[in-house]
Image 1: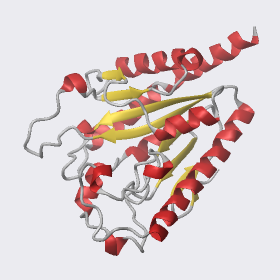
Image 2 (image 1 turned 90 degrees about the horizontal axis):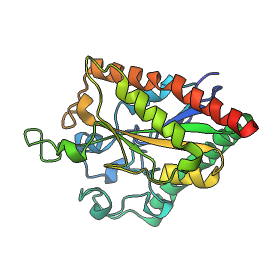
Image 3 (image 1 turned 45 degrees about the vertical axis):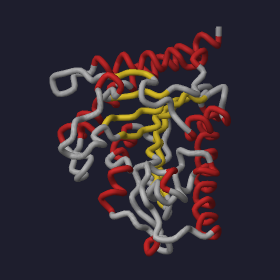
Image 4 (image 1 turned 180 degrees about the horizontal axis):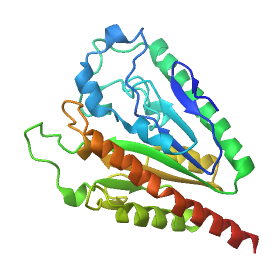
Length: 269
């Protein structure tokens, strides 16, 4: 099936019980907001999740936001989805003037449209599969003290953080464990990735919303890659590492399918 496109997101519908999202991959800002935004593009890019849109395409079904999180953040609750003050966005001065209620409402309409579409897509999955898995893919900064400053302590900043804070481990625990095991054992350019669960992040609104809407079938893995694969201050990426991350994620798919099949068989007995 061809990729479907509108001015807010890209999506591709395909078969299989694994779906992927990249809700912070977008960088675009709609025209009526551009004269008001105070941030330069480089600063905006630093807090977005560039390149994550490449990794969703390892599975047949996916959706990618093309608008920036600075327009509307799909991984926050609706009443916090538009950053109206620096306190909502890492202390950054976002707007040259306060946003009008009309502009905020326009952004929230985008928020609602996205979640309405996501519900349609995931409802289709429930019609075909008893359980399904969502790769909720993100990236996070670890050099906030500047390009020449020290990196954040690796003890508290794993290369891959798997957020499962809203996941029902009785329903999906075997999937989580298998995913982490297979990702850890992947030969990542001659070494192994540091993969840990709920160290830096536990997952936010997207995972919470999916689990509340599909409590008996959805297993959301909120996958946060530390930006070791890029220079977070310039936006320049290491292409070899980007490809390796894609392959690492691909390597987990057979195990996930095996665990889902085992769950299906156990429930049938």
